[in-house]
Length: 313
Image (tube, helix red, strand yellow):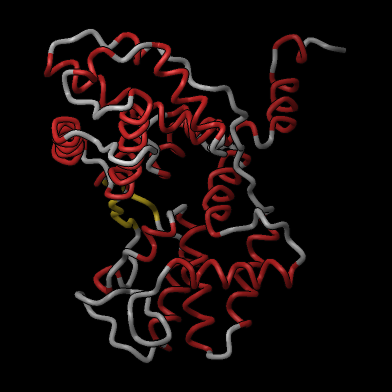
């Protein structure tokens, strides 16, 4: 970006207003807000550099399709993937939708810009046997018994309850002993109820018995080795170690355990809408990605159940 090119105060104020709106009304998560902020700041900085002058709030209403194409070409040339560019464009469109409503201009040029095509990455679950082996391995690979019990308890929550790693690590001691149904606050502050399997309750109870740090209502449920709240990287490392020992692919991550929870429920005949609720997905389309994981099984069920198949001799 040329020297002296900055984002105007007006554009910066508009961006702040939009982000405040997302926080207050949409309940967007902090990480989501920060990602949107970076994407739109990058776009605004490009406009200023592209036109050689600070692009103020009024000028934002006159963005052309040529500007949009130039921005997208610049991002791709800089190494941004099609998937990441599509996400950035979505953020820019959200900003413009909000701004045009307030400033009374036509934002169709921005809103009609097509996102680049990309192949969505499907979830890569592990098998039921592999999931059980991962839990067993994490329990015995740590030097200290309580740490092994902790890692196994966290992974059991990911697989047995379908929690995100942030949700599991965000639990406090108030959650112990685990109830039959756990109230989880997920992305965007949305609450959902998740049934707790006896295996998950037992795993957490075993960890708490061995934990050298106090587990009370106001403390983290899961501690790190030095007595601070357990971080996600520690769990990721434990999974990496277990994965290597078991010869599992690099896709066997903590998040894959959550995918496995959903996939195995679906394979057992679970209802997609119910699985959506358990996962805390905002839309069914997100949950539907899991149906592509085992298309062969679904087709076999279809072939057996379809009236034409039933009429075969």
